[in-house]
Amino acid sequence: MLTPAAVLTDIEGTTTPAAFIHGVLIPFARDALPDWAARIDLPEVAGVLAEVRRMVPDQAELTTLRRWSEQDLKLAPLQQLQGMIWEQGYADGALRGEVFADVAAHLRLWSHKGVRVFTYSSGSIQAQRLIFGHSREGDLSGLLAGFFDTRIGSKREPDSYVRLAIGMNVPTAKVAFLSDMEAELDAASVAGMRTCHIAREGTRAVPSERHPSAADFAEAAALLGLPCAA
Image (cartoon, rainbow, N blue to C red; front, side, top):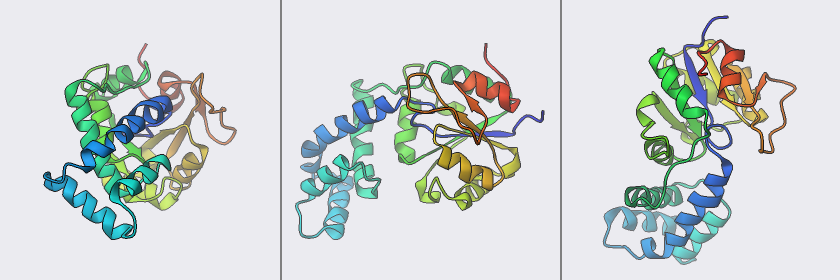
């Protein structure tokens, strides 16, 4: 089996527990919104608030940001402010990035073997960098060749994966895409990528009937012809 030249991986539910995203990161940022929204002396915050006012002119900026956070909307002003909050939280030691136990070993192995690894998430590129850069397994960000978010396109549209391959400078046929979401795998497969459904124990993911399925990165590596960490 030909070894893929690159791995593209989803984050939530694939490299990182969904409970960390929704039970730690998002509440942490939501609780800090009032304090950060008051820091109008910071040009970055002032810019975010100005954009929020432009988008929703008839409502207080903090009210809008809270509503967007509660609805988990992936809107640029909210993501920018969340990124500032999380960056400070990681720097202070209040946050540590979470990855599943098998992830760090495979990122290190694939990087060592020359298999480039990229991430693709609905979370911002900054949020992705912070999770891997401040993980409990150490700084893993240097093992990743690049980060992509949905500014490149929807994760359920085949054209997004074509654009991703162009950005990665790898033909789609030589990319292995890992995700816990079948709809994303469907789109990647239509674009020509090899796929593997990650259905981890203890999650809601049920092994796919349309794609090869693995319980972790070790099983995925064996299915896709990638180097496998013991």
